[in-house]
Length: 126
Image (cartoon, rainbow, N blue to C red; front, side, top):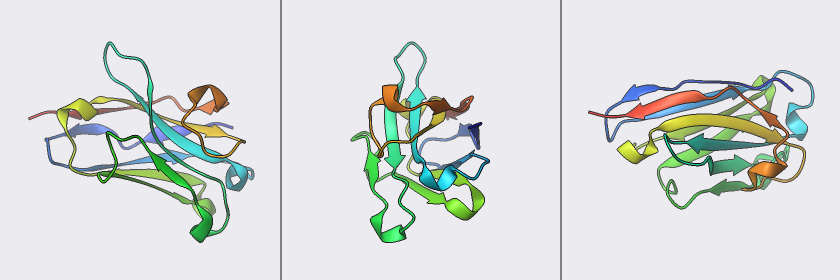
C-alpha cells in the first residue's frame, strides 16, 4: 500500500490546514488510518486515528489530548483518502506529519502501523 500525504505548508498561529492522505488500492476500506507527527528534535508521536468501518456511524475516531477540539479526522472510502482538518493551529503543531495504515483496529501504537507515507511539513509561525 503506497500512501501519499500532502497539504502541508506555512500557516500563521490560529490558522488552519487540511492534510490529505491518498491510499490507492482496493483494500483502503479495510484499513484503519492514522496520523502521526514528528517535531524537530522530538520523537514521532500519535495525532489521530480512524477505524476502517464502512458505516459512518461506527467510525471510531481517536485524538491525542494536545489536538482534541482542534483537529478532526475523516475518511472518504470512495476516494481512498483520509483527511486531517487542523484548526486553531499553534506553533507547537509544527512538525512533519505522516499518515499510516494498519489492518488492525485504529490504534495509537505506531508500531502496529505497517504502511507509512512520506510525510508533509506543517510550519506554524508568524
